[in-house]
Amino acid sequence: MHPIETRNLTKIFTSGLFNKLEVRALDDVSLEVKKGEIFGLLGPNGAGKTTFIRILLGITYPTMGEAFLLEKPVSHYQLKTRIGYLPENHQFPKHMTGERILIYFGKLSGLDNHTLRKKCEELLHLVNMTKWKGVRVKKYSKGMLQRIGLAQAMINDPDVLFLDEPTDGVDPVGRKEIRDILKRLRDRGKTIFLNSHLLSEVEMVSDRVAILKRGKVIRSGATTEFTITSDEHEVKFDGSISDDLLNTLRSYNPTLRLEGNVLTFTTADRVTINNIIDKLREENISIESISKRKGTLEDTFIDLMNEDSAP
Amino acid sequence: MKSLTIILNTVYESITRLTLLFYLAFGTIILLVIAFGLRGLYDDGVLIGISFFGNQIPVIDGIDPSGFIFMTTVGGSMSAILLLGAFATASIIPETLRKGTIDIYLSKPISRLALLLSKYMGAISAIGVALFYFMAGLFIIIGIKTGIWNTDVFPALGLIILMFMCIQSMSTLVGVLFKNMGLVLVFVYLHLFLFSPFLRLRKELVGLLTENAIVHRIFDGLYYALPQLSEMQERISFLFAPAAIEEITKFSFTPFSYSLISCAAMFLLAYIKFKRSDY
Image (tube, each protein chain N blue to C red):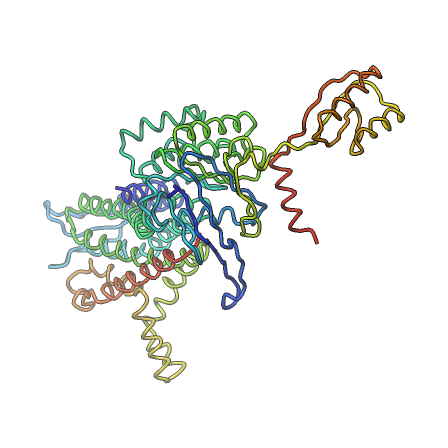
């Protein structure tokens, strides 16, 4: 069994008079997250990403289906000694300092004072908050709150870490630091479950991803499967191309198009590529670079979103 | 251990809020007034009476004059004690249930019952600390000024805390249901200052409107189902009553027993709702 497993998980929220209005937040979601991997759950707003995490943590109850954490049903609250969670838009008690928050939630995670003191220092240093540890959180910026939130989630050295929009409000340097922390945790065999809107972030750090739309998993797999290199090539050049030359190049490959100083064409045939380059060189056009275009997670995500909404 | 951590943090959180400090300040003002206004009157070293800002209360055989002071001070300030106390703790449950806060709590290895109970106990402890300060201060000041050390102050402290347990149960239930501090205060204050006195006089007041037995039964049911704050308030004041008055009032624990059952029932309802809710 995997550290995170769900089977046919469904959550229906009801509201209105006599609970007649129903919203299917999750619809038959079955997912598995392996030990020591970073798993990214993607989806537009309202897709059910946060509900999924909340069910796994026992914060929300499923309507149907099963959810397991570390091989136990999620209703076993004691297993949370091995879980860490950074919620989206978390709100810490405003009267506490950063250090006090780590001590408080560390104690609630069952840590003893000695371990806690050591862990606090270590984590404050790791998230670059040592300087601010004695300041009340009401004075923290969004980025600082995220950092202290991340430290709070890691205080009990969890085996499974759930992060909901961990880089929200964090500057680029901070984001890179968070990515590095996550990679180091993965290397230590920790399982990380990531919810994020920032697809480029997820792409950089996740081993596998799943895309959720209106509560359903519409695609899941290794991140590399979502970023497959296509047969589209880009040639950047210096100078200008005449219409005659462009027509000649198109005779080699009809998909060829010119945008500024970039020629784009799709082919798997190496001869065609060489012919185009040879012709350009023959006309004394200086080539700056030739590259094969790589699809991004964002491209795949947007394609999948559009696919489903197309008539 | 985890529960103790939450209880201590709730007390600390209440102290950092202006509401509890205001509560302590109010107690301090009353203590200062008594400290400056109260004076023992002696004749050859024997207490013959006490004066409060010049108004003399003579010692009558068998009647403890400090009882009058306690009765009027505690009884007189009781409404303010309850009003401010309820205000100081009204936000504890709604703030715990805020999105972003409850998520963190529920992601920790602590049961929902332990969390709710610890927050409840934290609120009671916070008020307990403030009340202890006030009542112990009263005990010491009156003791020093008159030489009479009235130990009835300690059972009274326990009974006032019991009243707060009832108020906090109501706060917890309303807080869990509506997650709104304003509504918590509306419900608590309405009960404290309107429903409870009304239900106490229900027979006379409802009798003016109708003789219908069912309506009377409904009000009787409400009277026993809800904490009898009005009666408790009066009983606590009369705890200090000198023997002569005590005979008339006949101190009884009945309202406290009914209220304790009501308090437990309200907490249980709050827990059931909290246990079953999605956050």
